[in-house]
Image 1 (cartoon, rainbow, N blue to C red):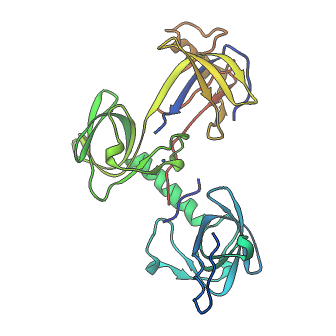
Image 2 (tube, helix red, strand yellow; image 1 turned 135 degrees about the horizontal axis):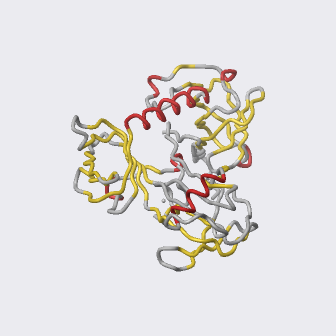
Length: 318
């Protein structure tokens, strides 16, 4: 019901790059005399609380808009545990229980002139509880999750290549499917998906219980996507536009790579950069061209051994 809330700096030319790219995949009414006035359409907003003041909330919606929500007298204010979609389990709370950083779903009617929203119901999920659930799910993904490349897809199962081994992933009506967004490889940006979207060659992460012999898994959650892994040398960098050109080592073609806000840069020790470069060059020491390495959806960018980009999957809560 609710969705979890989940840079690039210019460097010298000729540095090495490995990058994973998500492939493109989601009037006024007039009433005559004696005619009842039309009931205003209900409005819903989902987002994160930016500030609270008196009987109002300032909400940053998931669409990036800032909305001031006035909570009407007598409005229902409920707290729901992260992951729950059953309002029967919700607890009645007060407006004072809502704080900045919390996630809310508000329902009501648009304010005068269409500005703001007057809420008749507010459903809250506490940020602290969301963080706890995130931590628990991340631990479960590490303990009971695995990933690989899709080898085949049948009516209710997926064969996954995990290194040199094959894993049969069995799905059911209870399996939750998600698909990486076309413009992001972040786990939290993944959208609800279906088994039918999964194709041979896709990258896939699955969480569930493995069989005793480890040859199969009953999937509780599946996250899939189609990515291109590119490795090569950077030719040009446009720091203002957030783009660079890359000569792909595999195809020898020049590819335009877009760096977005979803791209994450982290420091890479010079020793590690040297090892990456040596492996990419067949064991030779790294030179001025820089080195590169792919590790699934992990992204490593070497800029004279000083910086690296790293994309890591993050578990969803709601």
